[in-house]
Structure formats: structure tokens, C-alpha cells
Amino acid sequence: MERCKWCMCNEKMIRYHDEEWGVPLYDDRKQFEFLMMEVMQCGLNWNMMIQKREIFQQCFDGFDFDKVSAYGEEDVSRIMETEGMIRSERKIRAVIHNARCFQKIREEAGSFSDYLWSFTGGKTYVYPAHQTEGMPASNDLSDRISRDLKRRGLKYMGSITVYSHLQACGMINDHQRDCFRYEELLKLADVEEREEKEQ
Image 1 (spheres, helix red, strand yellow):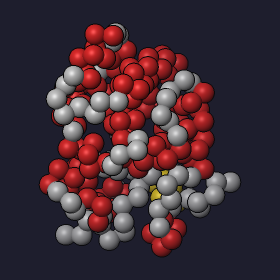
Image 2 (cartoon, helix red, strand yellow):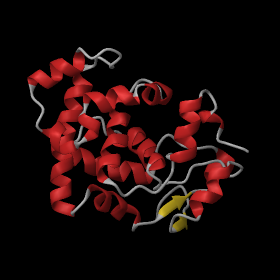
Image 3 (cartoon, one colour):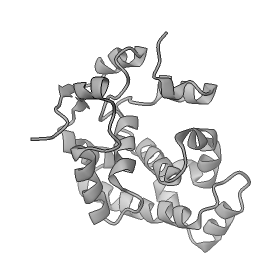
Image 4 (tube, helix red, strand yellow):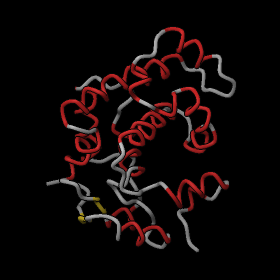
């Protein structure tokens, strides 16, 4: 069974690839979890995030954005002191801050998922060039969403971070064509083929 090569380093990564990465995601709590794991990942690697995922879930109440948005100084200290946690106070504060911004988007759009998927009209984008020319670190779509998230106050939302999230939550199917998940996920989505440069 062929898989994307990036996931083959350990069992947790393989399971994440096989079960979650690229599946169209419409649950706001999962959206928040994936997006905030991207925040924690900045400057590090995704394998570390997957290995520390249970620690993140413990620290941030299972990524319940309502609870996280109410965190205060005691919570920052508690998280900083948690064994195995990435001890970046800036990132921890950014997650708390982003939870409040996340709530505002939900209030305005009905759900964060509705807001995010509105950028593609509810479609999963497939870029054929990514199969032959390699995947970019960001693109026009992630540039647009990054600008809008920053405008709404979210932190650590550069275009590269956003692009990675769009892959994870199934808005972009970047599984390799010979990966068994590529065709499986095409069947789950309303797919639109795109050129790399948007019109």
C-alpha cells in the first residue's frame, strides 16, 4: 500500500496520515485543534507536534476554544510547567488569544468551518501541477486566507502556516497520486482542479 513518503517515520505519523490528513473537516473543535497545532509547530516540525499532541490536548482542555478563550495567567503558568510541553510563552499566549478571535469568527459566520470553506465555495482544490512540479510552501489561496485571519487578529497565521492547515483539513488534496488516500479522499469531496495561480 503506497503512502505519502513524509508520514513513514513512525506509527503515529502513519495513523495521522491514514485517518486524518486531508479529510474534509467541518467540525470547529477539530479545526481549532489543527490550526493551533500549526501555531505550536512554527519553527519546529510536524512529527514533533504529532508526538506531543496528547500533551497539547491536556494543556488546552481538548482544544475546547470556549474554555481556552477564558484562560488567564494561572493557566499560562500551568501550561508552561507541564512536562513535555513546548515552553514557548509567546505561542501559548497566541493560542489563548486566537481562541478569542476564533469565537468572533464563529459569531459572525455561524461556524469557523463555514468561514474557512467559503474561500473555496465548499470545494476541495486539487492542483495537478503539485504532482509533477512539487508542492509549494504556500499559494494564492493561503495568501488570501492568511491576510484575512491576520486582519481578524489571529497570530502566527502566515501563509505557509495556513497552507499547511488547508492541506490538513482537506481544502487542498495534496496526497501524492500514488498514495492510496488520494483517490479515497477525492470520493469524499466536491473537487475542483485548479491552476497554481488563481484567476
